[in-house]
Image (cartoon, helix red, strand yellow):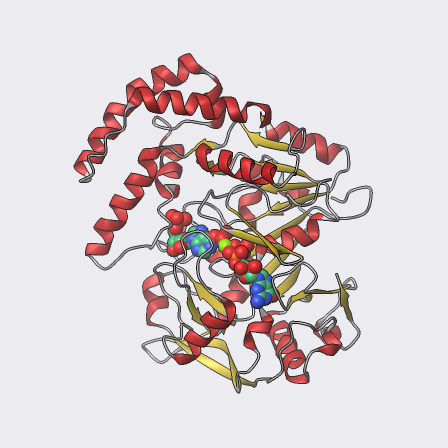
Amino acid sequence: MASQSGVPNTAIVGLQWGDEGKGKFVDVLAAEHDVVVRFNGGANAGHTIVVEGEKLALHLMPSAVLNPDCELVIANGTVIDPSILVKEIELVEARGLSLEGRFHVSSRAHVVLPWHSLLDGAAEARLSNRGEAIGTTKRGIGPAYADKIGRSMAVRIGDLLDEPYLKAHLGKMAPLRLEELKVAGNDSAIDIDTLLSDLLRLGERLRPYITDTTWLLHDRVNENRSLLFEGANACLLDVDHGTYPYVTSSNASALGISPGTGLPAKSLGRVVGVVKAYSTRVGGGPFPTELDDAIGNRIRDRGHEYGTTTGRPRRCGWIDLVALRYAAMVCGADSLAITLLDVLSGFDVIKLCTGYRTASGEVLDRFPPDARLLKECIPVYESHPGWAEEIDQCQSISDLPEACQSYLHSLESHLGVPIEFVSVGPDRRQTMRRTLQPNSGEDSCCHPGSLENA
Ligand code: GDP
Ligand code: IMO
Ligand code: MG
């Protein structure tokens, strides 16, 4: 599918464990799309945009908010804490940006209720006692999706506009929930009348934006508008295809787009996989290339690797090509955006994980489906010479040190997916773009002059 301007409907998805710089690329690519759509997750996401030194961190609102001509959609596959969304609307409006007529929230999206975050915290405390914590963001994401699938205890965004229904529904389910919380060791007093009036007030605030986004998105497709899908979380955190159970509770790979929007799979034109030039992970779970040493600390310091949502230090390590090959395959990545490349300046040697050695000595080149097996895997590395120069002011690939260009070339040839973008700093303008030729192969990658500024 392509719009009148010839721009195909595009997905921006993370191919690692999150925080790859998706927000930056949504902001960059929004300029050439008409509608930007969040299709999964909730306020567990933290997407950062930097324009001319000014920073904006968003959790629910699509990251195209600074593009005034873009329509913004939060579609049905998301879980929304309405108080966080209203705060974000106010933050955006305080910057003088209008949302009127261009922001839409699905009436089918699910509501994150106060007990979801409490249940999330209680489950984590229980797991933590056994040394098995997922390390969730405690934003109630898992319990909210569990209620969606369970059906009887869920509230959808559209329900916030139906007072009699909401009152009756909360009246039936709240006592069960408070009992459940008590059993979980949490006797937080949630007053149901106060909760009802809070939800109705938030619903009124959101009323101008609430709509059936499934019809709206189909209308936009029929009008030949170009759509940009903004993935939250990332492929290796996908509940079906990630490092289960150390994942989030939604389809955070590109596979989540269809169920999360109501658009058929054929609506998707191309997928841009966003990849950090190294690896990070927040929270628990296997991470074969993790560096719990001075190199890992150096990456964390240079990359300011602290969570956008929780402020937690991110675990850091070398790039993992076994995991990336799998994620690019699952997401159907047509091209890559390599981010935070500037962080790798000043390392004598940069390592790339090309295989996993298992306890039995076998070397795997296929990402295993079992987190317990992954935990036992020892990375097999290829070493690559580093570069000393800072690169954050480089304007094109040909400006990059030779060793840096060669590192990009190695990534591309190992992954078999062309690099379309290279990011050397958080700002919009610190972005290089290569015009990809149809069927372009690895040979054409990163040749000086083959990339240009976005
Ligand atoms: P997201 O969740 O994928 O949108 O990523 P986050 O916003 O959580 O984390 C990425 C962080 O890296 C943010 O602070 C960005 O501003 C920053 N960032 C993005 N691209 C680059 C880059 O190329 N270089 C540097 N140094 N920072 C970047
Ligand atoms: P963005 O969109 C990094 C991780 C959490 C935890 C696991 C489950 O900013 O890339 P959850 O609260 O979803 O139940 O937590 O998933 N996680 C993320 N890590 N970036 C994210 O989003 C994440 N969203 C969830 O740290 O390990
Ligand atoms: Mg993030």
